[in-house]
Amino acid sequence: VFPMRMWDESTSLSLAISWTTKFDRALVLTPSNRDADKVRQAIGALPATQGHTLFDASQLEASKKSFTQAGSAIAVLANRYDGIDLIGDECRYLIIYGLPESTNLQERFIISRLGASVLFQVRIRTRITQAVGRCTRSSTDYALVVIIGDKVHQYFHMPEKRETLHPELQAEVNFGVEQSKVDNPSELGDNIDIFVTHGPEWKSADSHILETRDELTQSPIPSASPLGNSVVHEVKFHDALWSGDFDSALSSAKDVLASLAGGHDLKGYSALWNYLAGSAAYQAEQAPVAQEHFSAAFSCASTLPWLKQIQKLLSNQTQEVPVDVIYGERIERIEGVLEGFGKSGSVKIEKYFQAIREGLSSSESKPFEEAQVKLGRLLGFVSGNTEQPGDPDPWWIFGRQGVVFEDYTATGENPVISKEKTLQAKAHPDTLAAEHPGVSFSVVFCSTSDNLHFAAESHTGDVFYISVEDFKKFSEDCMTTMRALWDSFQSPGVIEWREFAAHKLAEARLGSDDILARLTSKKLSSLAGGGQK
Image (tube, rainbow, N blue to C red; front, top):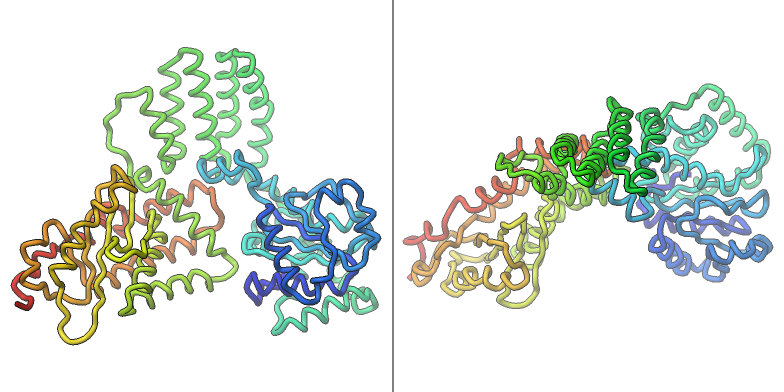
């Protein structure tokens, strides 16, 4: 059952928890302790489940007897997709909350810092299959499975992911997707009651699922074959490295790279193995070979700035850094923002855009500044603000450069930019220097007024000016491009998408230098002579 076809995550989770009253016991699987805590809070917030006994993994590992003999019990387990089996009437209700993707630092590094999420597609599919089977341990066993969470919902709704599942699971998912498109929660509840009763009405549905299963086939995961072929050489590499035989390690690393050649979406993983080959060559005192592999690693994944730094360790290159590298760190942050929007629908991203539009249209300082912070984060900048009087308004940081705003959204008849406001704007870089050492800030005065008071004219210094209307036009250009990036985004850690994003930003002239040039194209001093005396 997929309640998020019709409702948001919070509402769907509450619905799923409310359905536990239809069963004696329920199992909830989450990828992390933080997600498990969210589920426990939601259970405690619903009157119908406040009296339920909660179990955790350690209790079930010691003995599942207390759980399986209890009534009104819910087990909430974090990152436990195998090892705990609940057979038959021991548990008929399973909630999967969140996608079981990266569960440790190594996996997170390979996905986020290498862009090699393809490496874990088999692992994620295995965890998904294990998860949905926790309460169905035989061909005659049955359980209700409810899917909650943007990523896991998206996973089951992507045809290329669904087709890699076992045909029976595909058929069950297809049936659930269609049955979950209802107008109100009571319809879903009625369908669940039919399933729980397991009478003639359900047998008809079950027969339909089995017929669909027989028509489906399981597709292989792209790149599974070259990844499988590389395993024996990877093991040999680590054995050689562990024993200090760096020449043999280098040879095995080359064999790994040969196995990966031509693999679909394996650029990020090839970059890792070129890096490992370079490291082995360096340890074997073969500096030219090390440089060759470090360069190859960078060529495989030029959106990974840290690889460029390693390449330079053995080189005195002064060549211009490609556009991909300039955008690399920004794109990782953009990826994180887009991931937060999810792909189950456009509601979250459009709500974010609307908050920016409404904030920039407000004459009040707080919503205007919040909109600037949101826009900065959307663009992949380090973006922040303070609430203290006289402190800088929002700032964006990109590398060693930054922009700090002084916002003046006054309304009324002929508002004027005062000397006090101008001096305040000039002081912002000094205020930020302690917290952000080494960052060179440009000050941009963003205002609804273009009247500069004559007393302020001699104090404008290097302060720049942009009208609120021009800033709003700039923000619309940004959101148009970011919407296009979100449309093409599927999941984090895909190196090809990062390369696409880098070139898309370049085409839209939204590189860091382009944005800085646009925001600093006009000096505040250019308004001199038009203000009040």
